[in-house]
Image (cartoon, rainbow, N blue to C red; front, side, top):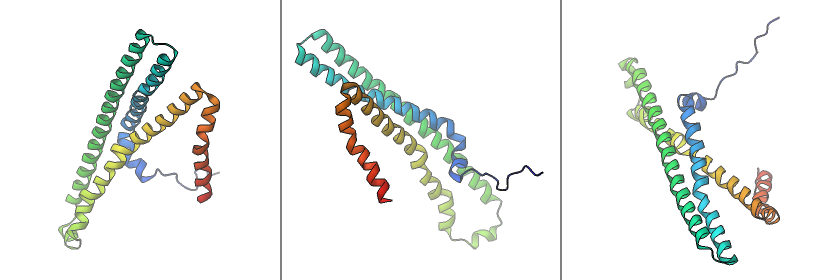
Length: 184
């Protein structure tokens, strides 16, 4: 009996292109999420400061909240900067690898191949197509990680403060998904 699958499973072209920098993209995305979470901590600090003032001013707790808020903000900014450096470094590695591969490939084609092509086609393969990957590799994954971190942090914080108000605050968010699903 033949145990080979009838259809050979293949990876998507994007997955194949991004595979050499996959680990760096994952690490940078995780760092972006952590950095964004830390950058939101001053909002918790503001809430704590407001509660401290309303309940009776205790200067020691007030200064602790201010110092912790600033420290988490700067730590979050530093971690996000490291994540952006890491992801842009990975993007540079990928684009360099792709450009070298295209140059090697084009150096092996006969000269007659170039006469049958417009210079714009070669330029597009050498420059434009590779440059269009920059938004994907250097920005997409870290932006998504930061957006998810904001949503999760906000939801957790809302539920910690008051679960009933959190449910009310999430109704528009849930309605968006219901309406979006019905639109398509």
